[in-house]
Amino acid sequence: MTTFLTLLAGMALMLALVVAVQRFARFPAQTPADYAKMEPAFDIRKHLSGPMTCEGVIYGPMGRVTSRFTADMHGTWDGDSGTLAEYFRYDSGTTQDREWRLTLQSGGRIRAEADDLVGRGEGNQKGAALQLRYTIRLPESAGGHALDVTDWLYLIDDKTIVNRSQFRKYGIKVAELVATMRKVDA
Image 1 (cartoon, rainbow, N blue to C red):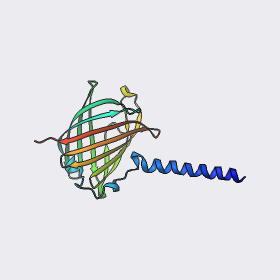
Image 2 (image 1 turned 180 degrees about the vertical axis):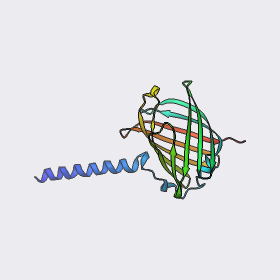
Image 3 (image 1 turned 60 degrees about the vertical axis):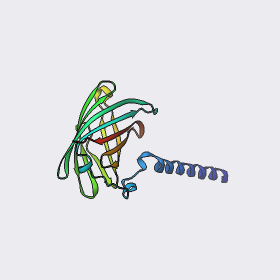
Image 4 (image 1 turned 90 degrees about the vertical axis):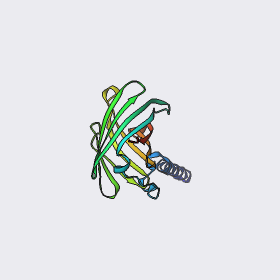
């Protein structure tokens, strides 16, 4: 009986260790508070405003690049409400237009809406980072799946943002996006 209890306790300890590693070592374990003291401070009204250009790659579930893209973006704001229009060009020759409708709320919280979201997205900006979580519905040509997305935008300087996003289905990472967004001088 003592051997069984020792084995059971060992299994419980291993399970707790696996859960802790997953919680603290994974991409979603970051919180906006982790970046609260970093400068310059991210303000979506300033840093996602005006014309921008974007270049990036999308990695598939095995870590290989499955798509490359460029995009032209333009953000406009009226107080705490804004839109971010995006025009993507993929290496496959396809194009995509998207428009985010963003609302800055108290405490740096963000509400995000777009036509291809299931419900609305919620986010938070603190220090030099912005996190946004939402569920996106892929077009039928890409399978029509609903994927849970976590976006992290890291402000490098007043003109440069690095975006890292993970896409999950049933909690399993199925894709990752890494992109750079830069302000275009007028």
